Amino acid sequence: MIRIAPSILAADLADLAGALAVAERGGADLVHVDVMDGRFVPNLTFGAPVVAALRRRTSLPLDVHLMVADPDRLFGDYLAAGAARVAVHLEAATHLDRTLAAVRDGGAAAGVAVNPSTPVEALVDVLHRCDFVLLMSVNPGFAGQSFLPHVLDKARRLRALAAAAGVELSIEIDGGVTLANAAACRAAGCDTLVAGSSLYSAPDPAAAIRELRQAALQETP
Image (tube, rainbow, N blue to C red; front, side):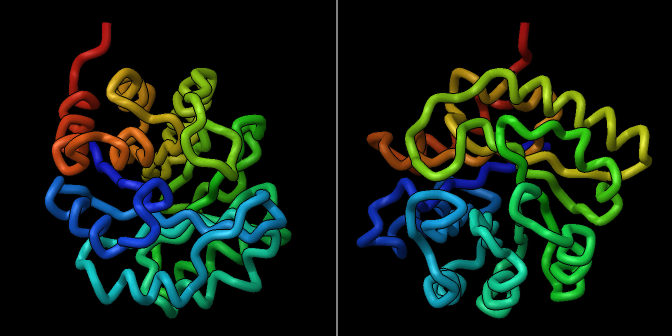
């Protein structure tokens, strides 16, 4: 199984309702929402009221990625706004085990996001708390960056860690995902592909979503 999660950060920010409609027409499984606080990463993006507005305009689950310096201060607001999945950064969470448990208690799937330079082995003691892990395949903070291939090895190592721990884990990958690397991402163990610029900059974004799914399902050499 492969899930496609269009990232609305790459869409026309003056027409987020249109971006949601494109995701639905393309058969997307999730809508990825990048939340940036201007501290953990340079940019500022979507507050909880925006997520609540998105929730009212789509039936697709909202996959909220908190790129924020103090996730404990904010994740409850995004749960209340209707997030179906919430990922907090390993590099930012002070009490990660407790935070993940609280996200689950709030009714959402709990995830950990890790930057390209962070080893996945640091997650071994919280895998039982995770519904998914979000592997950043670019350095977070800006759309349109190039894919970092070494993250595929991290995906393979993470899949092995989860198997050794007896944990059923979804692996999401975010950053520079395109038709050219989608199959390699899936072969490395990623089951959820986040893509932004490669979808919303396409002439037909809905068709691009379908094409990305097809590309991911192709056999790799």
